[in-house]
Length: 121
Image 1 (cartoon, rainbow, N blue to C red):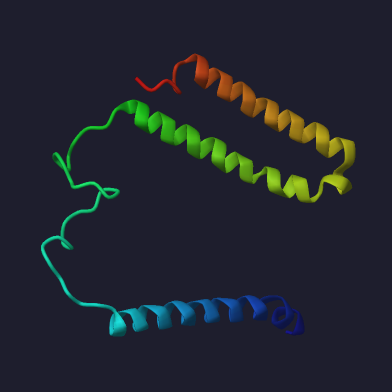
Image 2 (cartoon, one colour):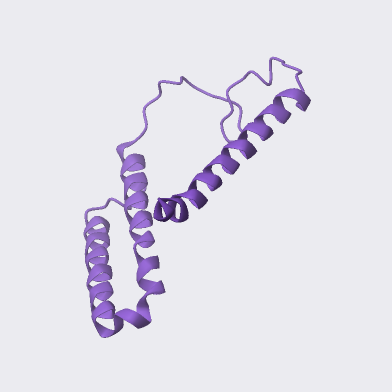
């Protein structure tokens, strides 16, 4: 029982405090926030530009390719952080492993580049 308390109690307290903070902020906003609806405030918002065209417009496949490539390479960078933290403990073995990891990513990037996935026409 003592092990459970020492292990999970801080996590439970953190989650409860986080839920309380969110609840308090949402409640304060709903009580004190301005409530002046209008036609302009009810419009769709597109990055500061007035909305144009149909909401069902088509996007180029290039847009999705670029977005997916960004996500893949962005998420892969996350895997470099644990390696950087444990670099001294891992030594040469860790260095070789991360170099292989980065080499695979570079090969993937070169492949995508050669296939024209990064060209925006």
